[in-house]
Image 1 (tube, rainbow, N blue to C red):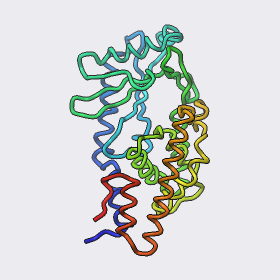
Image 2 (image 1 turned 30 degrees about the vertical axis):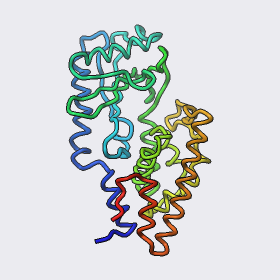
Image 3 (image 1 turned 90 degrees about the vertical axis):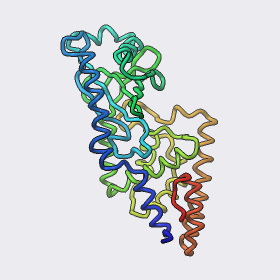
Image 4 (image 1 turned 135 degrees about the horizontal axis):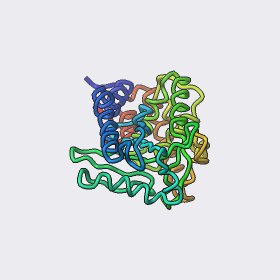
Length: 290
C-alpha cells in the first residue's frame, strides 16, 4: 500500500523515536553503569566521594533520536571531605581524574571542550559523563574546558522544557525529534541544547500537523537563534556560532523552509509522491517514499 504523506510522517516519527526497550532498559542501564563505575572509583571513604548521577540531555527530555546519539549523565561529587577546595582552581585535574577512573575498563576520551568524559562501550554507543560539584539551589560547578569552572543548572532547564512541552499539548517533543533528524542530515549546524531551546521558544501553540509545524519552524527559527539558557546560568546559547556558521545555519533553515512549503503545497493538491520526495530531502534518506 502506498503511504500518504501523513502516514509516511507517522511511520518516520515512530522509526526515529526511542523504543520502549531503549527508554525503559537501555538508557537507564547506561546511567546505572555510570553510577556503578563512579561509586566503585569514588566510594564514601574517598577524598572525593561520588554522590549521585542525574540523566540529562535529550535522553531525559524525550527528544533523543534513533540511532541513539550520546547519552548525557551529570556525575555529582560530594564536597564533604573538602574536594572542592582541592580543585577550585584546577578543573582540568578534576576531569582527568574522572577519566583515569575508567582506565582499563572502557575506551574513553575527554569530550567537547574538556567538559565531559566520553565513555565508549565495548558493546557500542557512548555516554558523556559531565562531572560536577553541587553549589546549591540546583546550580552546579562544571569544568569550563580551560581549567576553570562555569555554572550550570541543567535540571532547571529540563523542568522548563518539560513545562513548555506540556503547555504545547506534548507536541513539542515529537517536533524537536523531527528537527533533529533534519539537523543530523544537514551538517549538524545546531547544538542539541540550543536547538531544543530555540524550538521551545519559537512556538506559542502547536497541533498534531507536524508538517506544518516544521515549515513554521524553518521559517521562524532565524529570528530566535539568540536564546538564553533556560537554566539561567549559560547566557546566550548561540555564542558557539561564528559569523559564518550562523549564516550557514540561516541559509540551511531558509532552504528547508522553501522545500517544506513546496512539500505542503504538493500534499495539498494530492501529489503525495512529490511531497514525500521533498520531505526525504529535508529529513534524510530514511524518510519513507513508497
